[in-house]
Image 1 (cartoon, rainbow, N blue to C red):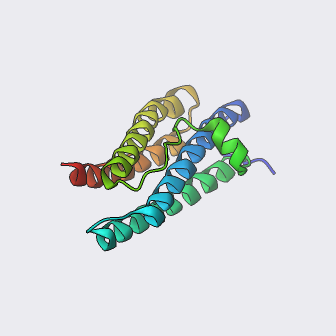
Image 2 (spheres, rainbow, N blue to C red):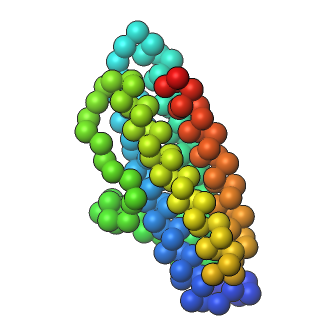
Length: 156
């Protein structure tokens, strides 16, 4: 059953398409953080292992929120790995167990998502007339900015 929330279906379709791309970005970033959690080495292994674990746990919560927002606007989530790889704005980096490279790759991914979220805020509000989704991505922007700051702090 389609929602009757005062937004035209064509607008909800556009919002869901953008949110599915965002979900793909969140999933790819989550996998990066998991990969780094599993493959970190070095003198501060324990600290970084825990840092990456917190990072992917935060991303897991964000992924769920994005997927639920897609459902709230009456659409289905793209939920196959092949779909995510087609939809994502992120790149899959080479394998590395270098802490500096891992952090650099995480930061680049967060900054890509942050820039996309900034684009989505007015797109959802102005073009699609969906202030709820605009507010939703505004809140995600703050979460990603904080996560990027934490990563950036390790890079100096």
